Amino acid sequence: MTPADLSAAIVRILAALQASGRLGAAELPAEVVIERPKNREHGDWATNVAMQLAGKFGMNPRAFAELLAPELEALDGVAKVDIAGPGFINITFSAAAAGEAAKTIVEAGAAFGRGTDMAGIKLNLEFVSANPTGPIHLGGTRWAAVGDSLARVLQAQGADVTREYYFNDHGAQIDRFARSLMASAKGEETPEDGYAGAYIDEIAKRILDETAVDVLGLPEAEAQETFRAAGVALMFQEIRESLHDFGVDFDVYFHENSLYESKAVDRAIARLRELGHIFEADGAIWLRSTTFGDDR
Image (cartoon, rainbow, N blue to C red; front, side, top):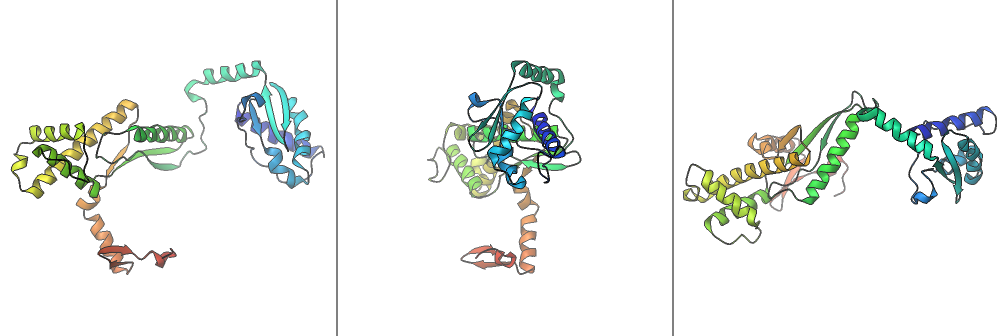
């Protein structure tokens, strides 16, 4: 018996108790919470249904649990039902029932746990989105596992899921990355706010070796832009390959820099200025969020 089966069985028991007059009139839930006990010695599954519903029926939780317990014990596969504390119900299944559940899972194969509850729903799930200023680290890898697992769970229930990686390839951190690469290529010290490490030296060398023009012979601003573009591209490729090797691929890779190249940011600021929603102060552009109910 799966947690969903157990939840449905409890709802049926509640309805039967109402029909027999042993439980008063009140709206029954469509499902109840089934979870693992904190201590597995207390049972296979636990529910706080008595704690949640007793008040609706004018009963104390312990008495409500005592009403449910014999009915639960009568279910096929249930070996024991214990009531703990003020009304928590712990349920233990027989070894045969556990084996039957395992058999059901194995026979269902990849179809086990799938459903259509989210059929027709489209979701955009953005995860990882690490800055392209260095190789992906354990923290980013963890979010890759969590995000992709969530996407798979949603898809298993029929959702149309788009996996998106938002590539933060614009801003101060990218400028520091470019300056770090250029300093390495010149044999200079890493900038105080820059990035250091063997990977910086390796990328800088690749850019020098693989760029057709003499990068260091370009004007400084042009050279820095060359290091930025080439360095980000190399990091982007490495991150994609690392995630692919980890078993995670994305449907969409959105580049933040594209918003600046397309002038979308400039157009947005111009539109907000036109509507009176932004102002300039202290050398910065501010959104007048108080217009929309935000605290100052």
